[in-house]
Image (cartoon, rainbow, N blue to C red; front, side):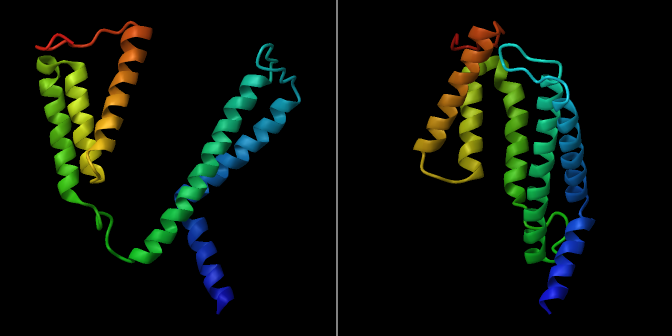
Length: 167
């Protein structure tokens, strides 16, 4: 009985396309990482000719492993749901509210400016996705807006809509 259950789980796992793709990327990543070691890797200050291929293929292999693990978790949750359909279990109100908020974000961005509009948009999304006390959505929205402003406006010298408030 246990062997049958194990065989069924393994066969479902292998039939899952995400898992199969993850296995392929993991194998290819490992293969090319080993191949790039034959060239000198060097170090961060003086990288050798094999350094970039090793990093690139290592990341692809790592992403393949992440895909395998997420596929396994999806398979386990699918076994629990059983035939609910592709769209079963989704909270459609949240999806519709999120799409409406994204549409409104594009419309009011020019009027209220980047900082205000993005803060309100993120606050709405953080509060909508997982209802919590107000302090966490406020804090996460504020930190995200400040960091994005620092990176894009100050560091990369991008210009944002100022809006009626002037910032």
